[in-house]
Length: 382
Image 1: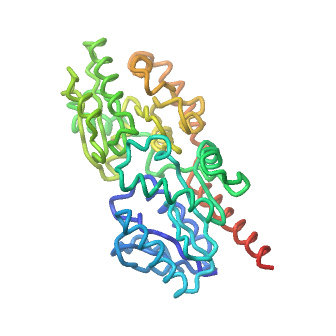
Image 2: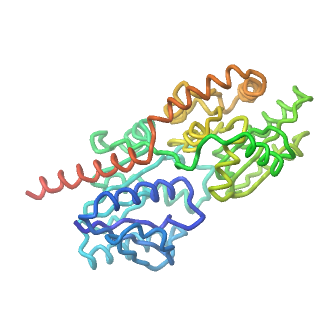
Image 3: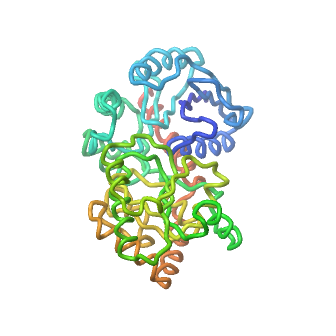
């Protein structure tokens, strides 16, 4: 088969959640299926590292699609033209966009519908685009993959899509995440937190990640525990540094204990994660929450939310908090800081929970979904 794939989010040193999903699954699928031809469609110059084998042909398609108007042009004009030109048998789009102007069998991956629940966290042009096009995409897709049972139920309920059309393919975690040796931990703490223990947050710095409440909770934790040298390390780019986040940070009495690293290279991030006292991830909405699994792989405890997909991913291996309840977050921080027996229990549960998630399993399940789509389409044609 000749399989075209939207790879516009494969960006060197700039992979986010969907980018990692694309990278990890396509690397395995293309290498496991040399009998097929794969056409990777980029919207800008690509890095050769993303051409995973001789059966992968890269295509650069104008224009760079990074604005809602350009999204429409790229997917509704450029993509149909390319699919016709290469005579594609199928199209896979891992970032929730597809073309409404092609009849090519299409597998769509929808990771979550956060914009339906928290539209105020999305800039207006993108918000309008998501809310207008995503339900159309969901109905046009021949098959849909998503990353949690929560997201599957959400797609069914929001867009009245048949659950029989949707398969769950859980995310995995980067294999770089592993336990860190004590000497490395000491060196990392000296480098980032003047030798102090720290909680870590990893992710894009936007309101959906609940940084405002995280700052307020950490400030309350420090106020209640004056002798604690604990720091809060915030790793990620400021995507939407909202007024609420800024106000929460500015009100902190202990803002000097919050350290912003910006984006870190994967090799450094692994060490920084594994040296933390705990991952603090009280997001208000997640379709999955990859940092939770990465923390389990690094063998550190996790504090995360009791909402959306996070309990599904964390199981019994994390402290679940109400992300809107500051006291709930503070209590979890105190348990991590002062209950060493509980910390060890959480780490052991995380080791067990992480076995349910791997990129090998994700890639296999995504390919099974693709084959299911092609079989159904073959039957329909016949």
